[in-house]
Amino acid sequence: MKLTIAKIDKILFSGEAESVTVPGRAGEMTILAHHMPLITTLKEGTITVKQKEGEPVEYPLSSGFLEVGKNETVILV
Image (cartoon, rainbow, N blue to C red; front, side):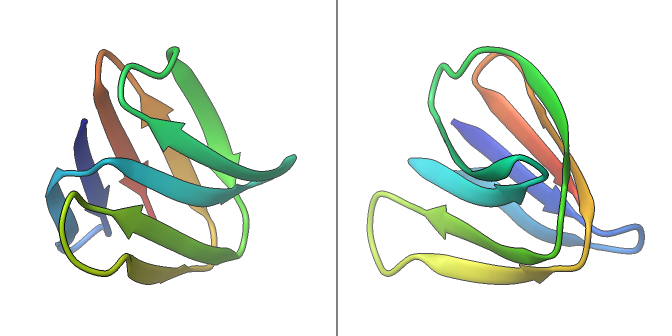
């Protein structure tokens, strides 16, 4: 899936990801390719991005929003 993680002043991540795990208001959730459409708020925690190769990459999060569309996920932090 295409994943974008953005702050108001810069892009933290933009590329292909196998999964992204985020701290949702109702608990931790993992988004995979072809996930159903979703919009939710995020709470303080860590965003974990898993790519096809290499170690997972983590980004700290104080709060934000997540939108899942047609095989594309956008996280605004």
